[in-house]
Length: 580
Image (tube, rainbow, N blue to C red):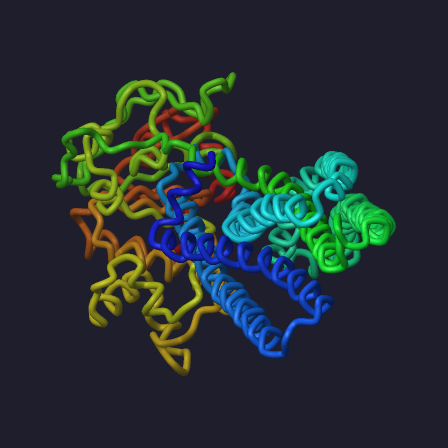
């Protein structure tokens, strides 16, 4: 897991190494300063000359300045290395998600992925910062201070044999009891983010049903739950302070009492004032090092859960792969389903699609109708290989879709969903998602074909009108027409409209279909719709029921041969004809 995350350090290895080297230098200098100070105290006691005092003082000032510089530069390089590492890690996780198939994405909730990209990576960043700085400084400081304490204090340094184990055991117990609470928090963060995401996305529904109080209470409950766990964990971690204080004052009292007794009884032969002062300083350094190590332990243990969650994303293998020798050209828009069955999950008891056999010629207009859950969307999602079939095969342009380069296949298929997404930016920027090199004229032609041009020109800024995030400043019908135009700019071999004219009036719907027939005759058009009027003039109409093809034919054939189609037609027309 650590090796996998370490790959994201990349170009920030140099500042990371510099930080660690600076920490080593700072520790060595800080451990030398008490040693020199002790010598100075003894020299003063012995009546040293002023020139020696000035020389020693300059050396101490020089060492203090070097230590300060090392710490300051290390802070800069450490922040650069940790922030850069987090940037690379976010890039790697986000890129990994972009390569996921729908099957992979289904394994993670949106809120969970957001938490992993934000909170979890922030925790890992903080841990990395502590690893390259504090985790280098504290063990070295502990080791050097112990050595210097024994050198300066001799047998008096045995106080650390008592103090250090007590402090270590106390800090480990604190960390052990705090960790379960920290671990619980991460899953609760997912639920909190999910609550926020749902509320923001469904703000109109919330206000429409006057459920603001309910949503506020739901968010408050989630936030309070996290607060309780954090409070419990922080309350336990706060015990570090008292434990540290007890050990520190015990050490001070022991050194002062025993050290003073030895100094007086031996008249400075075994121990003198300078050594006592150095022992107090080294004792503080040792205990502070252990304190920092305990905080590192807490932070790393807390971050382990974040590391696992990030690695889950990085370890997730995309279920869709390019073949060894992919085909980079789709000949036409012909489609064949040969004994196709499909399950969303391998262990699913029921197939979403079963025994599908269809042949669609290039340039045909195909309508698909069926009730909710009949498998309409599942059927068309297999064509651009958003999912792979469980059994059978699908051919586009005469070749199995699994033989194509995935990007080439998807560029030849344009899908417009009922809830398609517009992104924050101008209308032009949204349209160019279909083709980033599209000219203004091509965009205008596509918008005229999708019946979007007139309402775009009614805006003061026309095609430069800014679309808010999610397209909240345009109506549902306008959004659908813009999404259709975006798909048309792609100039696909196959155009799939998944109930994407549901928010458009019947007259506009008819104009869009007439435009398709006149201006893109060679493109295969697949129209999923709830309204019979949207598909009745199609070359082929497919009736879906319970994941199977219940009937296939044109309008007249299905009126005679399909009871399902006839019932839907009569319900929508009351037995009469459509008036478009």
